[in-house]
Amino acid sequence: MLAHFRGRRVICALFVTLLFSVFLLTSTYKEDLRESVDRWHNSWSDPQSTSQLRSPFDIFQSNGSSIHPHPIDTLLNRSIGSWQSLLAKRSYTQTQAASAYRARRGRHPPPHFDKWVQYAQAHGCVIVEDFFDQIYRDIEPFWGVPAEDIRRSASSSSKKISIRNGTASQSTDEWHFIRHYFDMFKTIEKYLPDVDIPINVMDESRIIVPWEEVGKLLGSSHTTQDMFITPLVHQYSTIEGDPQTPDDETAWSALVPYWDAVRVGCPPNSPGRQALSDTNFSSPPEFSSTWPEGSHLGYVSNWTSARDPCIHAHLRYLHGSFVEPISISTTTKMLPMFGGSKLPMSNDILLPAALYWHDEERFALQSRRISWNSKRNEVLWRGTASGGRNRAENWTRFQRHRLVSILNGTQIRMALRQQDELDTGLLNGTEKLPVIFPLPDQDLYPLQSSALGLLPEWIQVVSNVAFTWLACFPGTKSFGCSYTGQYYRKGFKMPFDRMFYAKYLPDVDGNSFSGRFRAFLQSNSVPIKATIYSEWHDDRLMPWMHFLPMDNTFVDLWAILEYLFSHDELASWIGSMGREAAETLLRKEDMLAYVYRLILEYARVSDDRRELMGWVEAQDSK
Ligand SMILES: *[C@@H]1O[C@H](CO)[C@@H](O)[C@H](O)[C@H]1NC(C)=O
Ligand SMILES: *[C@@H]1O[C@H](CO)[C@@H](O)[C@H](O)[C@H]1NC(C)=O
Ligand SMILES: *[C@@H]1O[C@H](CO)[C@@H](O)[C@H](O)[C@H]1NC(C)=O
Ligand SMILES: *[C@@H]1O[C@H](CO)[C@@H](O)[C@H](O)[C@H]1NC(C)=O
Ligand SMILES: *[C@@H]1O[C@H](CO)[C@@H](O)[C@H](O)[C@H]1NC(C)=O
Ligand SMILES: *[C@@H]1O[C@H](CO)[C@@H](O)[C@H](O)[C@H]1NC(C)=O
Ligand SMILES: CC(=O)N[C@H]1CO[C@H](CO)[C@@H](O)[C@@H]1O
Image 1 (cartoon, rainbow, N blue to C red):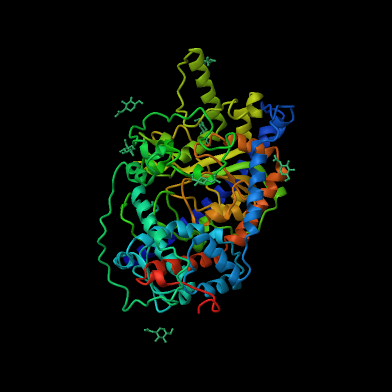
Image 2 (cartoon, rainbow, N blue to C red):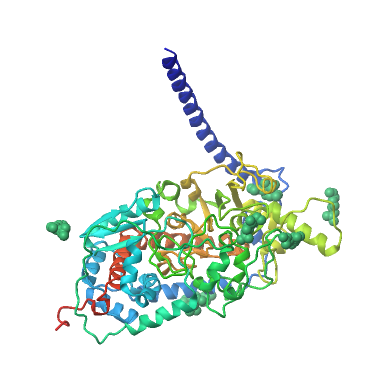
């Protein structure tokens, strides 16, 4: 009786909780809508408003001295040209695809290449050999490792997917990355040779082999590139027996600071290799007073080098991945390890990220597309303060905190005032703001808003950026946090789809790459992206044309925004180009074609007869 009564009470309580959470959900959702719409109108349609800006376009009305051509015009022009020449290399037939392969790779294609071409064509994939470059950056060093070692290390992994006789299996289903990848491999299992595919279940990169060592491996790899040998072996070996029971023998290291594990992967003369790790992060970071290294008049000119911590050594104290990553487990041995993202100097092998395959709700475009003209002239970002483990002693160095601060008008105003006080020596007793972003510099980035003295106000008007969780350490139950609570206001959580009502979507790294990027591209808004991570799609997206690249310090962000707001038609075009790229080159079919080809290469390099293996046209193989 009592038990029965209790049961009813529990059910009752559950029901009330359910009702309450439904209420809470709908009300925060509404509040969120109201919040941004109100904020939007109040800022300049309210006659009482003290704002000098009647619209976000006001600052462009005065006849400012904008440069002609703007550096972004030049970069965009260059990108359009590069993209056209890339697409001109498209292969339409098996013969074209094979000769493009031989020309670019210096080898014969792997066995079953003809089947791969058929698959890609049947699924409407655009075959441009360059789109697959990442596979070769990842696989090439393994030609210097004995095939038997690759196989042994792969089969000894306890977290792997195996292919045997056209069937995929997983060694464990405890990890969601493995479950998603297993699902992905299942769809193409019948095409794949026998292999073991160790999966990285962590966010962070795992394999960082010293640069000199990679050089040696690549050296031996080149000696195996021989186009004069006619491949005699046209089939992959089978692996007898079931996938091995794991006996993971790798000694994983948790070397702290992580930067010291990472920089061995940089070339000896690079700034990154030579920069000793920083360990005192208690003061706000310092920023360079020059344009970013390798930029074109301050704007990203080479997207590969802009993402490279070996070149931008200051990232060791400006990115959470190096300040304090959540987990560290690396090795300097060249072992196969597959994952969705990696640092550019690491030797992990890239797959399309599991999140992209799985279409996780948080990261997927669900609803119908919003037309450009229905989108708001707004810069929008919501998210948690991830990026590593932020603490009182180091949070000023985290990229997400930097993004939310640099797009906060109040903080810009306070930072400028503090700078004035410092310059004039008139130090006020007012509370000091830790200034964690680079201050505006009219010599480097002439801003129209700054020229009018309206940068803080302009940013306040255009930006709708906030944290939904401060992710402090030690953790807190509510949003607030003893060391960052006073600098950030809680932004209401926003369903992912609602973000696409904003034209401009900054996208920065979390604990590793940002899983939002693909959906941002699909949304036909304009992603403004900074990252240090490499992904499978890097060779098939064109910066400036499909998305806007920015420096990892965000020093160029305000200038990029001014450019976009003053070139609405062009911005709309970039949004539509990004969408087109996502819809033709980043589909699940494209991911599968990439993985299919990757596994053919991986199976060949793991095969004892690899130097004799290859595919040739029937009429050639005499
Ligand atoms: C961009 O290219 C177009 C046509 O190729 C040319 O007319 C224009 O002057 C170029 N603009 C810049 C800034 O290079
Ligand atoms: C491999 O699979 C095929 C069918 O897909 C089956 O006929 C064959 O017996 C299998 N071979 C082995 C060794 O299991
Ligand atoms: C870290 O740097 C701050 C100032 O930048 C200094 O006050 C503090 O003593 C330093 N801490 C350590 C452990 O060196
Ligand atoms: C871009 O930078 C990378 C890495 O620093 C370099 O290898 C590549 O040659 C550069 N590309 C161009 C077009 O300059
Ligand atoms: C100092 O603070 C007072 C009040 O807080 C303010 O009115 C004054 O303008 C400040 N002085 C400077 C130089 O910012
Ligand atoms: C902007 O900065 C001010 C001052 O630090 C802070 O009070 C406010 O909450 C910040 N806004 C957001 C959205 O974080
Ligand atoms: C890499 C590094 O030194 N991270 C530090 C961040 O701050 C905490 C607290 O001081 C240290 O424990 C970490 O080592």
